Image 1 (cartoon, one colour):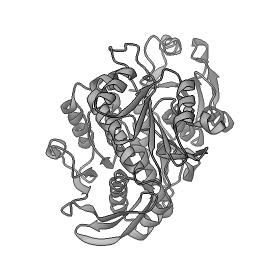
Image 2 (spheres, helix red, strand yellow; image 1 turned 90 degrees about the vertical axis):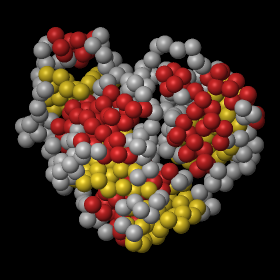
Image 3 (cartoon, one colour; image 1 turned 135 degrees about the vertical axis):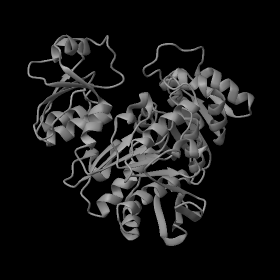
Image 4 (tube, one colour; image 1 turned 90 degrees about the horizontal axis):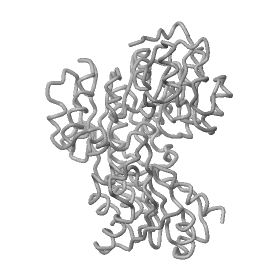
Length: 459
């Protein structure tokens, strides 16, 4: 594998530079003095930011983008060997790195790399920890898989030895990392187009934990099913978090205010360490906050600084994000696309002021929808009304014989008021007709379902 010497900047080309993670890596290299070029299918705010920062961005992935002077090409899991630009780079004999390999190499450039893993909650927990690190004046470098207002985007380049990033399990990309502190928030069945089953996923997380050095730390939810399967044989220090007082970092006396925002007693190794007040709602965010608090404590950050940082965190883009109101209807957008995430978001919504809750859900990938079909119908039952949009195919072409209409039929059979409408325009018209003043409308999914709420707000 090609190794980058970060003290000797070179020319790095990114195939798919406009992605949330790829653009962040490109920004870091630009600030380190590297020459950066890249391509993406279309112009976006992220590509425009990169151009402003000095990157050369090509639109459309073509062989001609592989210009003279490139030293190494970085590509994502979405790029396959039949991609015209990728083939041109290979033909020229250029060194190639995956996005995960580059991110892993970047981590070795810092004394305290921190990687936040888990099937759900990575972006939120990374963002919470970023707020804590900023409140403590640690000047971290942060790479987050969402837009975080506190850092003005998805990346922050600091001058300290702390590097904070998300660590995604898909295609085992997090096995390319070199963390000193690793976090595992949860382990759930997902990405079954790559993993065989939950046991296969669990083995992958065990391998991730095994990357930690003997003087490093694994911060893991004590509620993890078959926890010992992940922690057995590790040489690093293992600390746990959760609602049980026996865990190293725990929450007690959880309360919610009128917006559903939680507060709780922070218990550190059996002792009260402070009353934490969050500015985001849902019990799942109590768990995310505990993970962030545990890492902060391991870094020597005081509870007061950690509490101040968490208090300022008001969420990231597309995580139960308030979008506005139309005709007295509150519009919320949420990225949830796995049954566990859907259930958590809809339960959190119950604490938020509303008359009735309407959830417009866009399933993400045929593989996930088919594998977790009954889990989806169970999770979507935690709302008053469900409207199903067509499945967002993402990287897939085979429908596997499953559709959103099937989900709607199953939901109705289970007594849920559910509808399937084939176009966004029909969904928008239906919402304006059926939703009443005081209702909450949540657009939910990892695709482009967010556009429905944004169009409604223009009405």
